[in-house]
Each structure stands twice: as structure tokens, then as C-alpha cells.
Length: 83
Image (cartoon, rainbow, N blue to C red; front, side, top):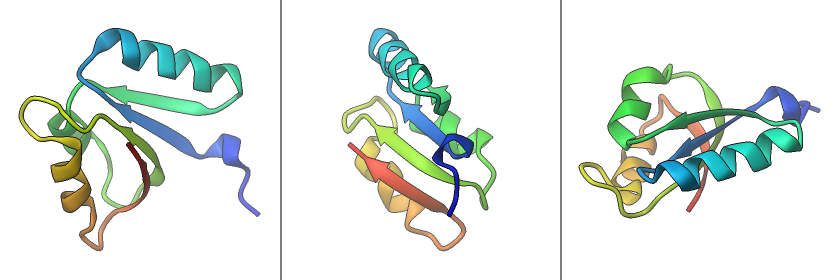
């Protein structure tokens, strides 16, 4: 069984305060967290074969969380999504 503390939670939200609060909460329980201010930033920085859990904002400028979900349905990605 995979140790969940070795997996990464990616928080993608354009609101700094919410992104920071969620990050602090998840780190407090021992999770590894990486944050991004936009869906485009996430796509530009994540490796295609990475896996993890995504916490997405549905409404963001540029690419929305729903649009990012559609992009991540491509076979090169392996993420669990939370809105």
C-alpha cells in the first residue's frame, strides 16, 4: 500500500488566502503540498507522468478548473480531482 504522506496534493486556486489556508491545513496533517495560482501554471510545471490529488477552483481566470479537468483526462495524466 502507498503511504499517503508520500503523495502530493496540488492546490490550484487564484485566491492567495484560500490557497495558503488549504496548504497550511494539509501540511499540518503531514501531507506534501504544492500550490499554483492558475491552471496554466500547473500544466507548465507538472510532469506528465506524475500523480497525486488536485484541489481545484472551478472559477479561475484563463483556464477554469472544469477546463483543466478536461485536459487532465488525457492518458498522460494520473490525478484524483477535488473541486
